[in-house]
Amino acid sequence: MKQDVLFISDLHLALEKPEITRRFLSFLQHRATKAKSLYILGDLFDAWIGDDDNTRPIPAIKKALKQLADSGTEIFLLQGNRDFLLGQNFCQETDIRFLDEYATIELSGQRILLTHGDLLCSDDLAYQAFRIKSHSPEWQHNVLSKPLWLRLIAARWYRFRSYYHKRGKALDIMDVNQDTVLESLRKYACCTLIHGHTHRPKLHEFILDGVPAKRYVLADWKPDGAEILCWRNNDFEREMV
Image 1: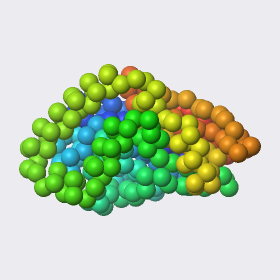
Image 2: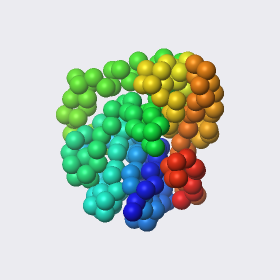
Image 3: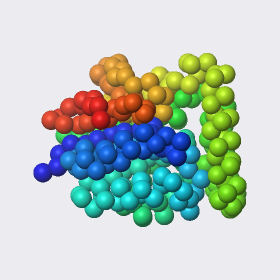
Image 4: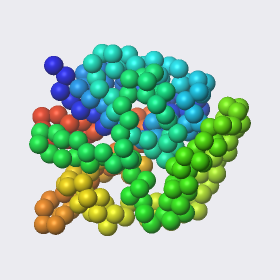
């Protein structure tokens, strides 16, 4: 009987990253089939320009996700800052279920808070302003109404711009704000938080209103290796795939 619950994020799948795509497809076909549930906490793709995009390697990824869902593993997806345009058509094709930007689950009686992580980086005011704009229905409709070829070009430009913007920002600004972490845990009545986004995998332990609390930061996937977080035997453990 499947029992493991797996958490991953920040794969940034793209045609230019074939090693990571191969690793992910192998993960879906082997390790993930042994899990009860798989939670993908954002940035599955390096850039998502609309559910009508079926350029490589998207068809192979959709097929593998659907096969995993058909095998009995539940798949949940939380949009990230790179793939927030993922829509219902993608979910229907893959049998994935969307999660809200903050989602709570329960594991052995423990309430766990899940999020991508970008909302926790509240010191990055420029990004937060862009996030508000880019999540508006008007902005998204305007983008998705453009021809696919134009969106493909725009996605390349966005990745290039994002790379250089990050180089110019202080590292602390791009990390989470601890006060925002505490506020989020209080709001959702949780003492454990799991997120990605920052590419700084680590377990942070602290005190929340007199109670021990934990923040698990998921690793980004790389061509030469990947790490997942696994819930097994009533505890979390990191696992290489």
